[in-house]
Image 1 (spheres, rainbow over the protein chains, first blue to last red):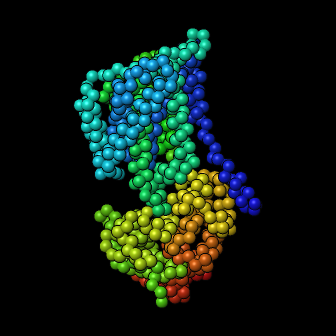
Image 2 (cartoon, rainbow over the protein chains, first blue to last red):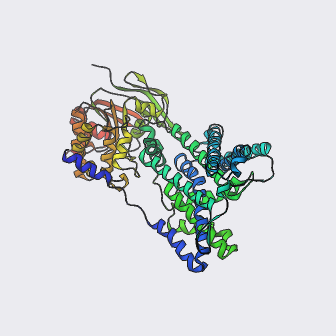
Image 3 (cartoon, chains in turn cyan, red):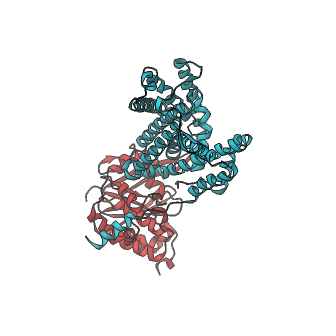
Length: 340
Length: 241
């Protein structure tokens, strides 16, 4: 091996330094909350619940941050893909009630995987149609994007209303995911929340691998920074846009399934209800940043849970206050993506 | 004489309500180093962007290797064999030098021989191969932008003001590198404000003013005619001393 090649390979392994400050801030929020809450078991329960909620918010928001960052599209319709995903899980749950109530762990896992698969496929398909019909005519026109995506959201919500009715629908968790798991004296963590954490981590790892280890990921990262230059290198950015939009919609659908099981009640407006929270996460994290989206989700969930316990009245404005504080510290978000 | 590699005839470009290019005509001979000169706002950058399809020509024809480029989308134009180094370099700051180069290699793989050649032109690229492009200095970013255009053989390279704002030592290094590119037989269309650099590199020249080409010819002729330089570019004798 030549010296040059050796030096090059040495250089390849040198990765850019990780910005630890936002991660430390998240840990600090959790640590500071402990003496305020007073009880370790309550703190653990609140923290695990926040991690689960944060992971579900991350799943729902990760697609939006890429769409926002890469396509510069303000998609207020993103929330409806969450509702679509959640309602599509009914198509699996209703005929497979036996699997849901079965004590077999395999059948329980099977029904969850089927729900996720159907929800992601349906939300991805809706995303494809949404991009073609609603987004494409309004690229680079932010005001129109807000108006037409909100309109698209209302139309799809009304379609769900027609097919599933307007009343809230209660769903049951699969048998083995019900109840809690004792992890210490007086400390019980709900099983489903642990599953949500595991699925959230899996989604994060998969996204990071795709973005950092594949050519398509490289193109997405480059496209977030400078779509024009990606085109000038010979790549059709529009196709990448569509792919990211469909993937983002499918992830929202996955988030919808997770959120539906978390709430155990489905409502037509459930996506719209979490949309503000998702936008806060995307803005806090930095538009287009997946790492920022994860940390932002965790911060939002931790602050929401702790304040809801300590001072419920403050909880109503806690996320807006958090966003203000973060943006005063880092106006471009926790992990700003350089854009040209 | 063989047919030029690139020919622009009567090219007009509108940006919004502004009529920027008002009938641009010039040709880039195959294998030549052609320099596009002109004052600020003459339309040089717009010409390169119009060739790349980043702004659409509203009228006129752009022919490259016998094909009409005017109505084609940018990715197709790039894929037909044209590399573009924009004025602001547009390196992907969040990607490493290596990733920037991989992206520019349309085959998805970097040819080792080609890479060694680039390292010989710009040793900094080898030193910072694994570092994020955002951490590079302005001159290094410019080297990366040019390396990206050289990572695979291209029929034509469009380079927009590569020496702008760079230290003299880096400009000298850049000129040396361009000489090697020229010797390798690559056809280059270079937009340049630095007349000394243009004079050293150019075989042919086109001078633009107010969105039109006002002079075409051999660089040697323009370099020898100080009165013409003064008239076309506003250059004075001290430039040559």
